[in-house]
Length: 150
Image (cartoon, rainbow, N blue to C red; front, side, top):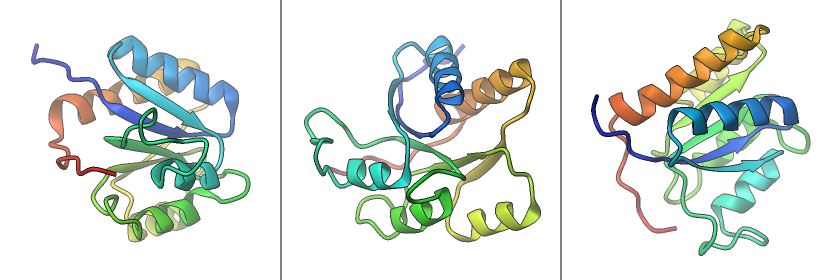
């Protein structure tokens, strides 16, 4: 099996149960993953711009952003739109994670610059399988953009 490199992953998920399951599954597959969890779109933008409490020394630039579609304060679509306008984040992979499987949501997210869109299945086993496969793809298959300083 090829070398599994750790990723810095920014997870934006307001449902604590979903967040814990995602973090646990990502760590189970690749213990070296550095996963930072926030609960709304405003925190994502603060993190990416190193605004307090997210100082650049502690919170490194993510290799991958997992973005829930329906969050308080600023939803996933609005957050994605603003991420794509930030210097240094135009090419950072963003995966939308949602319970919604409507064509309108999926199409809009891709039009706003999402790199992938996955739906959250209701069954625990199916949900963890999708997260494992997502991690496998971004760790072993995809070539990520080279990181530039924040």
